[in-house]
Image 1 (cartoon, one colour):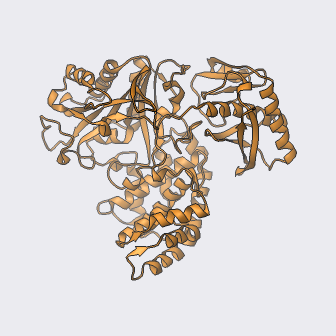
Image 2 (tube, rainbow, N blue to C red):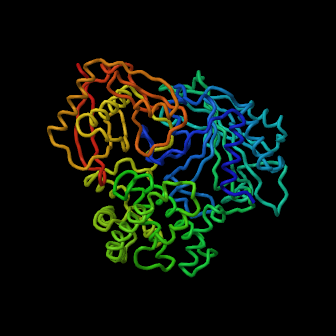
Image 3 (spheres, rainbow, N blue to C red):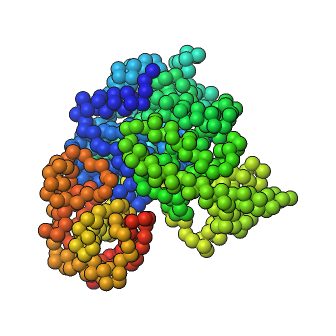
Length: 593
């Protein structure tokens, strides 16, 4: 048996021996990346470095990263999909390439994890009009003992990553599959399109993916070779544990089994026959605990909306198992803290997590019964639910549209989603909801406007300390090309005079044309020199420091202008409460001309 702790330790130790430096496991809330609501992969920590900026720890990096993926929420309930998961990753930032990456992957699989070569198959990029077939990777695999019959070439939809948006870095990938069926011999030929060989986590299971970012897609749709070629790999901890321990169900591994057993005990029902609701409950509760631990609370927008949806979907499935009342989740959530003792922030925030979950349960309970009764009245003798009625359930009873969809699906009734979305836009704009698939994992666009706004946050950060309180710390930020959003600790609403003073001080430093300089040093030295850091953020042992004249000094990895005169005129649009003890400022920059 190989457990979670050992798998992570073996992985990081192996890549350290290959010259990689370990980078910290970061927050689930991405910093300086407005393209995603959550950290969906370890590469989010490396955005500027994948685009060419030098990393303080060098060109070879590795880590284990906690992730949230919301595009798979509807898939949760089968054996292999999860909202929260841990990703093992190693990166080459313009250093080694396909040969070294594949050889290291193969060595770790066969020597460290002791997977027989005959149980490994791979896929490579098939090639098309944009890029040639990846025969280079295939030949490397062959040289390592993988026969041609177990190397499949697949098109872009299967073996290509990116770009994240319309343009940017992208390239082919090679995926590794493990034969997870001890009752049948490994077939000589690997055919990933044979549905009998790859269904719901059975038989051939993908366990690792090596991405080779070697192209840049231009605005004209052309694929040009990149100057800096990067390797980005990913191995899911949960799925890997399942296959290594001969399991075809991720929920039977140590990362989920204690939660499942607790649900069985409290419900008096067995996992067998109730797999789907129990998997949904276990997954959503775990994800909710981790999201709240990183500072998010239930709401109707952005990350808070996803959290609310997860909690309420867990409650609905608890009801399906016969649970009644409130405070249903926390007794089950107790197991999450036991599974992950290495995540100290879970224990440190346990009281807050319990309180937020309980409050959301009570809030939902107050509306659930009324909403269900209304739903039954709405669908009586009908084959369709209007968008207006679906919106009424959302607005008045707190039903996420996905919940109404699920209830309607069970009754074989259709919902007018177009009309619902129109009603929703009239009432409020549901900003950046990951469940619609609008925001996908990828590289943030470091446009000129974003760069100017990002540098402005450094000035704002220091101005707040100068005007309000020297103990103010950044508690989060979000920057798009249109505006910046900055959270900081402060106990009260700012006065109009204070806001003006802050705005004036930032603009004063912009007019002074202060130089922006970057240097690298140890984290200990950086903090000793007075460099500001984000509250709760984890940093590597060597960090980048950005100094703006003698005014500001911060640990940061984002994009910066070379001189403050490039920024433009700074204007605060709004100051408001973000959460208890945390204030939020929204601001823009205007061209000086």
